[in-house]
Structures are given as structure tokens and as C-alpha cells.
Length: 370
Image (tube, rainbow, N blue to C red; front, side, top):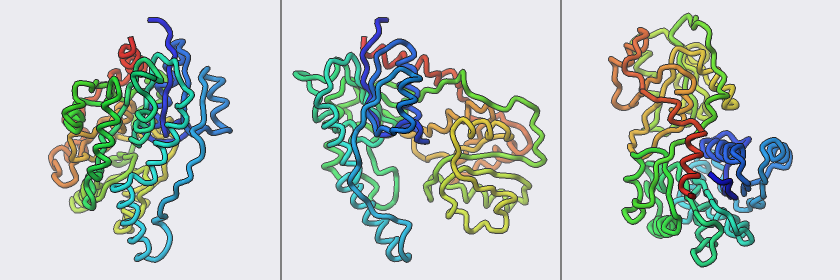
């Protein structure tokens, strides 16, 4: 396969700790490792990125400063906070604010970019694709092949208030994706979330990781009580740990549940067990997190109750080589939970890490540009 000139456009990149950052970072590194001429357009970090450019032989260009501000939901009394939450949600769902700024920044950055064999734009946020669509056309293409990579479908993320994006935004999202040559999604369950007019363009390409460099604990586990972990955010009423914790406490279970999350406020009702049975920790770098999780008896995934979204954390969990307990917080499988506590992992999620090897994942992108 001949080396290609590749452009990647993404809001998120190393050293940010997020699924889209991991997607972008791993693809850029692997594309370059295989000898391709790789350019990345993102928010350039003048401290970290020059080192990355030199180490991985890539070029990073800056999207420019973000100017749009949003409401701070951490300041003020409870009424001010409530107003800020509502205002921020309305602006997001009706006007795609503040992320709409990305459309303008991406379009501006692409005006002078031409002659690429492959362009990969990465969402979320979806206005990254909108910015590409504003500039890229068949008559004046940025690249011979444009792949719009969608980690999540364009929607309201299942929240109760304003569940769906406004109709004009949904139409804008569909029209932008129509200009792409391919739309990549991480698993086949996501396809149904996309407009029928787009489905012929959709290709399944999972999240990719360098599985050769994952450092996990390989010694004997000697946890005095069943010890398990979780890393990520929560969605009260859907991806919610509280019914699971309540069940364990009601059963009188002895356990240690370590949660790496920002959502510490969600656990104010568990003061009696905080620090003993429920251990709250802040996010840590991904490599360190995988090692820490690999020392636990098992890890927990809280089901999204959504067939169109696959948490990328499941892949990280598989890399830890620990059994994965899948929990639907509002339909607990008590037998499976009991079996996990007894060391019987027959119901653990079956995930093959090799399916997510960045070498094969990057190869699937490159094949689309042949």
C-alpha cells in the first residue's frame, strides 16, 4: 500500500483524557508510524505538541482560540445553578452553542488545505463535520476521500429535558454527513441511529488502541474483600451506580468499590460507607488507570440502556484482562452479581482486545482511501 498524505481534524487530542482524544491520538500515531505524511488540525498545545510532532513525525496545526462562553453551573445559589443548567441545555439543544463555533474554526482552518489523499474528521462534537462540509466539495475537495468518524450519533444523549436536538440542527447534521464519502461508527448497533439516506455510507470501524503497550498487573490478586472498579461519568436515571450500590448494601455485602469519576456529588447519600466500601477518586492518566483496574477482582460497566451507543470504556476494561460485570442499574441481574462475588465470571462480557488493535483499525481507514 503506497504511503498517503493524510489530514485528521479533531476537537480532542493528547493530552486530553477522553474517548475522542484517544481515537484521534492513536490514529494519528499509527498513520505516521506506517510512513504516511500526517497533518492534524486541532487545538495546539504549545507545551506538549511540539514534542509529540518530533517524536511521531506529524504536523499539528492550530484551530485557533475558542471565544464562545457558556453558563457556569457550579457558581451561585441553587436557583442560579438551576437556571444555568436549563439555559445551557437550551442553548446546546436548540442552537448547538457553544460547539457551533467549531464549525467556523474548522472551515477557516481548511480553506488553504488541499491535495490530501485522505481526510478523517472526528466527532463528537459534530460541528467538526459541519466545518468540513462547508469547505469540502467534489469540485474543490480538500482530500480525495473524506471519512466522517462518529463516536456517538447526533442526539440529545437520552436526557429527560429536551431529549432531541432541534429539527434544524438534525437536518444540518444529516446534510453535512451526506457530503462525506464514508461515515464510520464504532459498532453495528449504532447504524440505526442514522438517517436512512446515510446508511449506505456507513462502515463499522471500532475504537483502536495500541494493545502492545498496555501495562497491566500480572501478579496474584490478594484483595481481602471483593474489589472492583469503574471509570467514567454517570447519567442519573440511566447510567446510574446508586441502585447497584444500594443492592449490595441491602444484602450486607462486604466489598470495596473504587470509582474514578468527577461526579462525586452523586454519592452524598453514602457518607457512612465513603472511604471504606465506596472509594471516590478523580480521573488519572489512562495508562495508570488501566494498571490500577487490573489489580481488582473485576470491573463494572453500567449499561447505557441504549442499543446505539457502546461505551469505549468497555474496550479499556478488556485490556485490563479483568472480568467485566455488565449492570443495568434499573433491572439488576442479582444472580450474575452474586456469582461475581463468588468468583464465578461465566456471565462476564466477552470482548476480544485484538478486535481493537490500532494496527488493524488504522488499516480499515486506509483501505477506504484506496
